Image 1: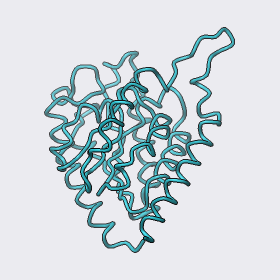
Image 2: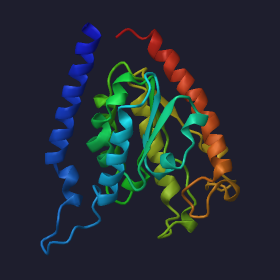
Image 3: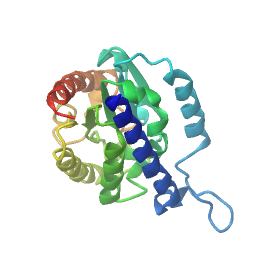
Image 4: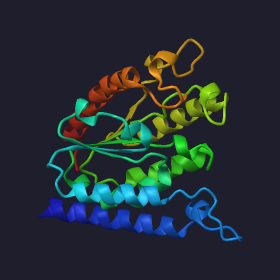
Length: 246
């Protein structure tokens, strides 16, 4: 009974966080401008449609599954190759704000053995690194305490191939990853994973042989490396949480 009450409390607190964020300036970029247009909204029709699909699946997710939440990088990942059973809740173009909106709607998270979180690259042109980290903290604080979290570093890119090109992107990504690693060090249930060294070329860009042509998304070979790293991180997260007192 105590365990159920604790989980319910986590959901209530997390729900309050989401409500406050919904009312806050974090959602200002999703609001119409003075002429009625919506300037590059974060909560789009595509987001809502994908969330509806996810919620249809959510009640059938097995107990003890690993839940993956992220953007198109997660959406294109074979999550069962990392852990089985798993469920893939990736939504292309999603941001940390979108994750805050949908996180606690996934009731399967209460029964999960781990959460894998990969998000942030689509935040880069919307907010600074400090704001992204603040959103990460809100996300992590809303996760049930019984569930360990693997926080995946923002993956490297090839800025020359991005649209529009941004050759300074990797420097900012490295800075962000250092901050995310520091955040994860605050709680033993938060495991930081950074597979960058296995994905980059000599110049520090996402290697041509491991990316899908757009400078951002790994191809199957790149994902295979990421999957190997994720397997180890998920095993570590599960073993750590079992040894941490509630």
